[in-house]
Image 1 (cartoon, one colour):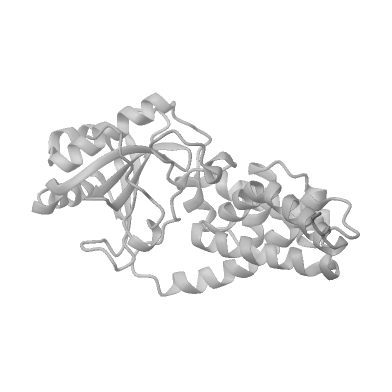
Image 2: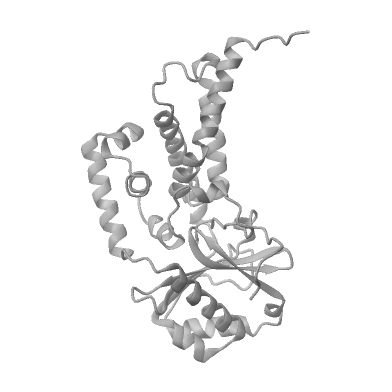
Length: 314
């Protein structure tokens, strides 16, 4: 008995589903860099999918010459609305707020979330200080290479307005974030040295590797104790903070895995099979000392971090 052919509308919906899947990685990358939250990004992609499939009376592709541009426009506008909700949550957040890290798996698997363009955790922190529109323009232009004319269509702004937003965002970011990228080997070595010194309470080693004006941001969201309520600035204060944590008896139960986080080498601490914290280091322009430490320990931001089985432990 032959199979009943799909109605034409179902066939078009299936085609539209394939188009969305083909562009999902791009949409994830754009939205994540605008929001800094994996959970909110997934929600926005779901909203984008619903908007996409609801159009055209069951034929989402009807009248769409450039599905990629249309989907990016829908996703970015959903993301801007979600950005307002995130800002409200941040107003009552306990302690420093850091972006939700993108942590690579330990088995070398090609994680779709990490195949897309993703800026460093340190740069995401800087992007938090931009307005939502400035951030969207910066991400689309600087990270994904969209020209101002296309961004204008996505945001429903004039090209002149987009150029002005781009100039302000670029100047702000470049003033706070030097255009320097440490060699991966240098970053990995600095990360390992720091973790050994911090967990071992080695004051001399910490004083050697930390820059005098180092800052530590610790995001526990009020769910992890102890967790600082504000950033700690200055090498002496940071050393006291770290050696105090290193002296806690439960530190010996933590296991360290070295992973790539937002494209950079970083350390992930586990307590048993559960993620305890993600630690990302920022280096000085010379690359010989650590100028910033970002510690994300809020369990709500580590839900999709898995320990894995076969990996080197520190």
